[in-house]
Amino acid sequence: MMNDSVIRVENVSKKYCRGLKHTMMYGIHDIAKNVIGQSSHSEKLRNGEFWAVNDVSFEVRRGETLGLIGANGSGKSTILKMLNGIFMPDKGRIEINGRVGALIEVGAGFHPMLTGRENVYINGSILGMTKKEIDRKFEEIVDFADIGDFIDSPVKHYSSGMYVRLGFAVAVHCEPDILLIDEVLAVGDEEFRRKCMSKLNEFKSAEKAIVLVSHSMELIQGYCNRAMWVDAGVIKDTGVPRDVINRYFRNAVGIMQNSEVKGRRWGSGDAEITDIRLFNHEGKEVEIIESGEEALFVVRVRFKKNAENPIFGILLRNSHGAWVYGTNTMWHDMKFATFHAGEEITVTFRQRMNLVGDVYYIDPSIAYPDGITSYDWRENALKFSVVTSKRVVGVSNLDSCISVQRKADGQP
Image (tube, rainbow, N blue to C red):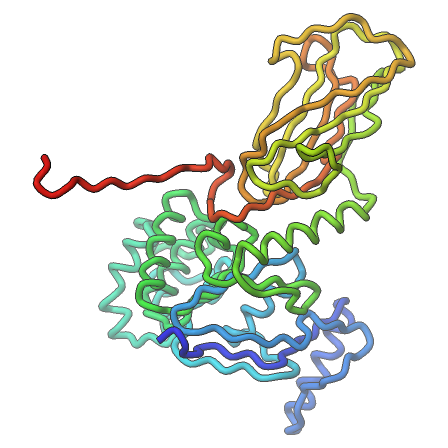
């Protein structure tokens, strides 16, 4: 039943030390307390400690897929490790109802000197499988992992992708009621990711509970029933994935606009990009654009020396650093008379933003007529967000119109 709670987290907190010195000192102190029968858990921060997760409460119901999003270091993986029992909370309570399968770190639970075969049995036992159960499913696990004869090689010789394939294969074949997955699926190749998603769809159909940590907003929006945004150890927002992701993007853009952090810059400097701004179709300067909306990137340029027929361009990247789109005046067959020293101009790129929801970066550039040498190139000069009310995955939003027709009875 969808209303059955399989994970319940109540006011949970977890603290870490910032430095190695305090980590070792407190570790020895806590071990000593445990030896004499005293509890090593403290609800107060000691010198050098901080709350990695702070007073977090949520629940996951049977058949629900919860996606955790947030910046690196926000506490997502720590939450997952506490759900798996790798870490114990310093405050609060976690209740798990059912068998847990987890893939949280590449190679977690594997002994590097043992073979893949031996690690399957060890890891399977850790996940609650009996030897008979592992014997019965061993060939399925090996076939799913698709690592061939490496199954009898020490796992220290495995690539990160092989680690992930074998770890995921064991985790999903233990028939868990709850599956915990961190970003490690990004390590696998495209074919393996498709195989994993097919398996996860089987889990969803069987009303298993899944908690997924990912920086892929396309995956979170397209696959999860609910999203939870974690920021600095606290739950910032939770709800429908599309809405939570859009609010997360808006926050990310706001942080960037208040930051002095910029990308690299290179070129001769004989012409320079002095400003770049984003405007919507109404001419209003914005930081967020709706998918499919018309946008204007306005670039201001100042020439320090005479420049004959320069090339003006932009390059668009997504949050993963992938090139999404690029264009320039040369490819549009635009030629210019000489621009003179001291002259200031404005170059406007009018674009239809048919993109999926994500955070994007713009690199404006000015190049010499050879198209290779730069006057000025500013990396990540502008950061903005695209939001959408539709569920789509990939890079572009092609805005499909779908129709289904059924033949009338008696017609061929």
